[in-house]
Image 1 (spheres, rainbow, N blue to C red):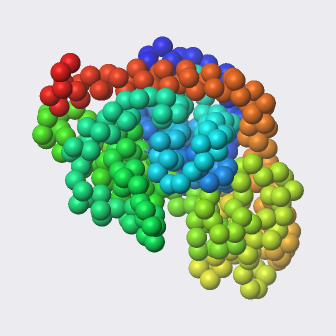
Image 2: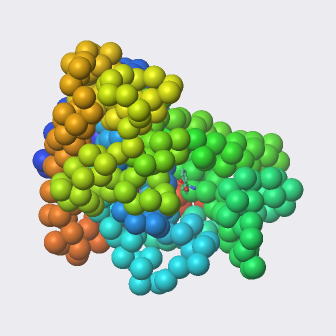
Length: 364
Ligand code: TRP
């Protein structure tokens, strides 16, 4: 898709410029992200399940995806993966489009990278079958996520067992060098690499062996109520998770009620995980160093500090939320963007499949 490289970043609108600022801030407390900005191809997937994406997704992943986006980056809403647990069809369809809408809202620009829905590109299921004949039952049985999700279930679908093979197909179709993921996906990525190597070994060099990349340490946002757990869609207490879809008052309320620690000092320390998390949040939102922030809030108590965290978080999310609202008002436009995204993804995926079919001994 060489013709995309020079095109404008029009569609990201207001969210895009705010992302530039946010991501510059990001550099200040971690590695210089711009260094890696123009090299690798990338693929990542996000499940359209369990409510709206949250602040942890945004600060830990989306913002960086938007900052680093380029034409051979693919971001996929994995609706087929969402079918591996009990679900309701209408809800799945609604969540799929809403998740895609958030991806555009955070600044992924369809004129630059490719955003699409997994089930629109049938090559994913086709490659998954072929890789099923390369992956082994033994290695899938070792997957921790499978063990956790199937534990205590009366009936476990083959789809849940096979989930990581479909994930490998997602990645390998696009010959992605890099796969930005959360820590919980480490084992699935290792499996994808093994499947790629085994296929290449058996049938000849076909797939790129992908590398996982992880958000920097400070971008790992914890639950506001259960401070030793990552902020997550499946959190026990909705009060601990700031949804991108929350309004500003709700956001403020959740931050004001965030669990802090005994004492009143605004200081990052192992015995102050609640305050440390809020400091990380503020650092991620402002670009300041945690040490600077500790000085700034020295002697001010938790109330003032939290109020300012809430203001910063709402400020960072404001353009993203505005853009989401705008796009939600025009679902037909989003569907059109997704169809175009799928066309582009399919071009790449179909090219890979031609080689795969030929190598694997299917009639071409
Ligand atoms: N399993 C991933 C998750 O739950 C989602 C996913 C599906 C994915 N396919 C992928 C992530 C490919 C990275 C690459 O987060």
